[in-house]
Length: 315
Ligand SMILES: [Zn+2]
Image 1 (cartoon, rainbow, N blue to C red):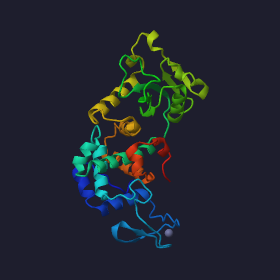
Image 2 (image 1 turned 120 degrees about the vertical axis):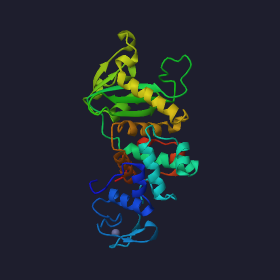
Image 3 (image 1 turned 45 degrees about the vertical axis):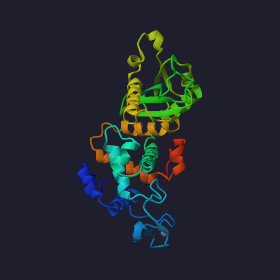
């Protein structure tokens, strides 16, 4: 990290990553901070360099490249395109849609979409540390709110569970769940929140299992407290409305249920770094995760997939 200088403006960014060689050198430092390590024989040493970024292990002659077995593997796009996309993705205040990225990069829509989806997979891995302290948990509905429906609990396939840490860093976690059943909510809370934390929810029976799972459970029954949800649970209420605004604004509301989770990952990555003054550092984190995340297939990023599958990541 100390060895790497981070660009602070787009101008400096373009200068620093002017060609694929400069990009590859940066990735090598992220992937092998202690020097090239051969994936076949684990020997650490200076590799031989061949054309098109091929690296050859001096000990066993194994051929590899800096992007092999990462999310950037087998890309037909120049590394400069990936870098440019990551820069725009991490510096645009509200992110950007595949449509906007298509224009910005001058690629096809399909390419822009595939890049975005791969970076979203890389974002999953960075959000593994559990929330702690006092955490508000609630669900919200994304898209297709049923006319006259109460809260859509158990009725919609676009229910999003949200956890918001009230102290410390104020981090969030989100998950697209099939419905607001106790089973789904229990699983979400266990994955997102440290045992022993205080979980603040409303009176929904789906949260009744939390005490038995090792959490302190603070329950506010909204209808009897007389306060609307945004007063008694301000954290989740605020995050839910920001999420909805982001989907409507940046993505024009066009998020299909099978891809909702990947958008939630991007929103979470972005939200949890909202106070970072150094955009270069956010770019750095994303590229670092991209190097540490195993490849995904194009069909995986095109047709939706279970992102939790990737949460463990590579290495
Ligand atoms: Zn080797």
